[in-house]
Length: 115
Length: 112
Image (cartoon, rainbow over all chains, first blue to last red; front, side, top):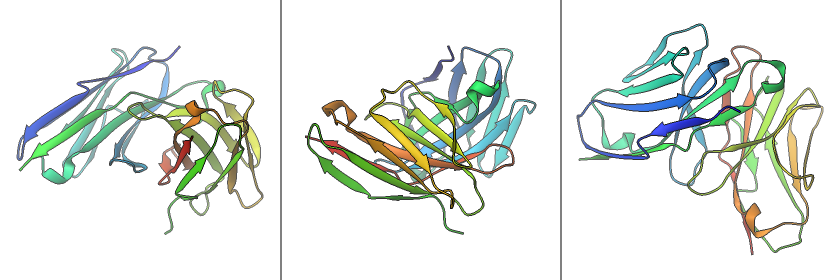
């Protein structure tokens, strides 16, 4: 059974700091991995999608890496800003037809960036 | 482009009642998935529909059911509501390329 873990559960940093959020998964047979942002009480905003054949994806100040063999992904946020404060979730889709469309989520890392 | 839309935004029900939640996917997307997110947890997969056919089901009781219409919009129904059904219900749509899922704003269901 696929399990996704995110560490740390919460993180508080001063503005301008570079930071790394971690995600690990127990079954390396994944189809893709997606990082999301969620503001309190809101829906999820897709940040980055990494296909299983890819090693990393970049969007602006965000960079996500994927190491399937070790079951790990990291989300790197450069020059953090107070507007980056939110909960960040990673999710994987397992390979195989029975897993089609089924995102398995971690519990998230709640980030606070202090001015 | 209009993103994924969901209605209603908030809903309050009492135990034993039934509820219907609605979702419209991004234009051109044929797949809709439903997730339940309890406070402090990551979302849990409930269903996925593709072109009106159920393509996946999570570990939820039969009180939960869904359907997809010819215009690809979807409804999630929950019967015999329990206090534990209180959650944010999220809908996601998926295009045919790359399987990236895009989420709506959610429906906050409170069961009293």
